[in-house]
Amino acid sequence: MSDVGSLLKHWRTARRLSQLALAAEAEVSVRHLCFLETGRAKPSRGMVLRLAEVLDVPLRERNTLLLSAGFSPEYPESELDAPALTAVRDALETILAQQEPFPALVMDRSWDIQHTNTAARRFFALLQDGRRTTAPGPPNVLRRMFHPDGVRRQVTNWPEVAEALVRRARREAIGGVADERAQRILDEVLDYPDVPASLRSIDPATPLLPIVPIQYAHGDRQFDYFSTVTTLGTPQDVTLQELRIECFFPMNDATRSHALQLAGPR
Image (tube, rainbow, N blue to C red):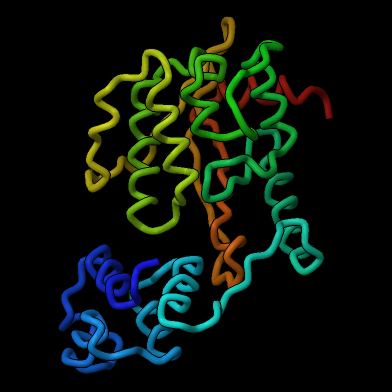
């Protein structure tokens, strides 16, 4: 584990702040901040948390900062099925249900799919046509999109979607959301057959498009969706902060009609 000074400097650099700017926002002297980063001074627990707050460090990495400074972690990491998270699970189920008849899913920091609504299960089962994927591990968004046995062959604008996913994964890694497993999965999927080598050299700093449509084709039906990603506001638990809710919305009346047909009579 790196020393706390090196980690503080890493996060300040990642957030593109000078020592002067960070010191001003955290209301500490530039000299003291310099001493903390070089190891000439040891921060208090309160100082670690104050700097982490200003730097918008994710909760998991705030715990790492505290451990590196010799303190115990501040934020718990609960299992999603823990009794304490019952209200959150109910909220997630409500969001997923309200998205019907359009797909929605909940994923974690490794892009593993934790929950889906009925529309998502129905839609992706349709695309799979009964085929079983040989991708390793639990259902995962990156593997589903890149694996030859996934939905890749049904995505008519796959090059654009694949590039957008890689940019997003790289950007999240810079922001401290992605973990080592997510990076391993990304490296894995980039080695799948017929994945362009150019995706490995994508610059994550390149601005993202406002929306990236995902165009699926199945038989004579075309499904054109775009998605929104939502996170939970002001979480105080590592697990909750790392959850992302992705909801798919139709881009035209034809897609809306196809989704309603798949849902069947109400």
